[in-house]
Length: 155
Image (tube, rainbow, N blue to C red; front, side, top):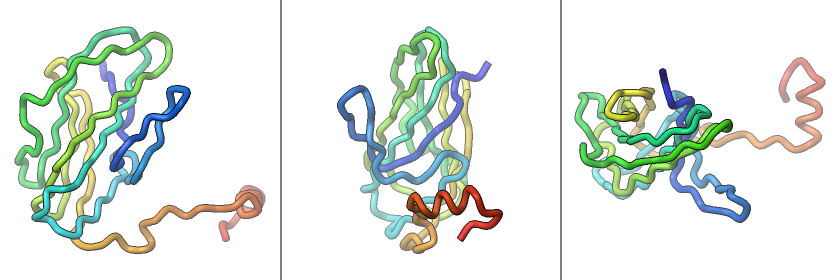
């Protein structure tokens, strides 16, 4: 049985009133994540992995891992936490990783071990250099959304 449904990747989460969080620096949902790193030698990137768990009531031991294209581990093995999942709705757990350095461009694997068993594994692509302009999400206004919904072709 798999506990994890999804993993969102961003630079930070900010707690908000009413039990909400603002997602800052959204990269995407795995496996659809592409990171552009301007300096591969600088370990200054903060990365947040936001995992969504299936609805159930249970306490779990979770341990994240990111591996390089040549399978080297970026997170110390002892980095683990206990979390409590609650009842009938999905639960979220955010893991903040400071000082992550991506030594080479390529395909990295994000893994989550639950009770010391691999439960989630997806890849993301890391590129060297600035992000291209086309990487930014396209924001559509109300008129554009209405046109897109009623038209067979996006503008």
